[in-house]
Image (cartoon, rainbow, N blue to C red; front, side, top):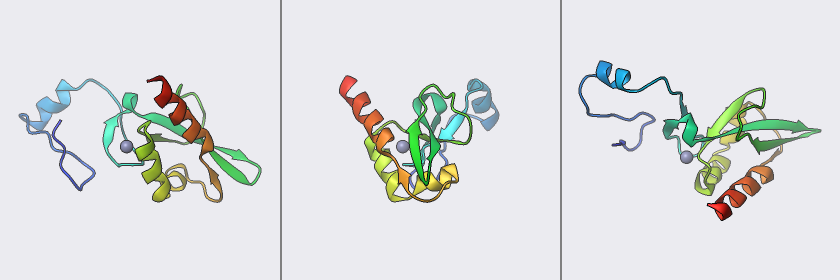
Length: 115
Ligand SMILES: [Zn+2]
């Protein structure tokens, strides 16, 4: 896929927009909160916020079963770091305060080891 730099969208130079839409089956596209690339949700990890007393834990939801608001992230540490740096977790999940992302870090580390 050809991706333009800078913007949030991308341009695919193949025929008419109508054809392009029809060529793609119903597939939800989500934006990674780390790098802001749009991807099929199958390629992204869903994350949710879990309130624990005064803290909020950001936890992975690989089965996508957790209720509530979710956000999407490439399951790689690069995107985790940029999301953290830009405070994207709080914004995407509508939470504030002390965000604990250690569960998410651990998940990505383990995932990396086994891949
Ligand atoms: Zn990403």
